[in-house]
Length: 153
Image 1 (cartoon, rainbow, N blue to C red):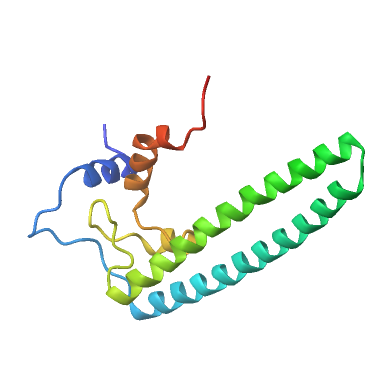
Image 2 (cartoon, one colour; image 1 turned 180 degrees about the vertical axis):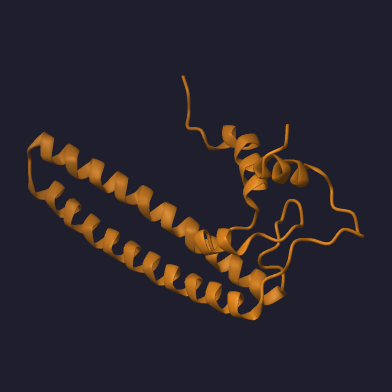
């Protein structure tokens, strides 16, 4: 039974790279330029989202301080908490973009930090700050899942 490309990718990422192995093809200059533009556009969108979220939080805080109704206060508090979560998520992505730019400057952008193989251009277009190929990212998420859980009883 033939192995799927997905399984081959996982196996490839679990096997250490030897110095005589050649990684997948590197990004060409046109692709690097396109990805740099995508990073800039995504950064601008994130900054606008953060600014919009902070502005809307100010409105909810004002609503919560003016209205004595417990239901409105509860809604305002929930909205602020959700907004804080969105801002934290966006800040995390901004940091990832900054790291991607540093990898571009150092010449390691597009190289998987786990296995050393090149990250496919299509993956980088979808996730321009990606620092792992898809199989390694899946393995990372599976093995680091516990660290992202909240408190349990």
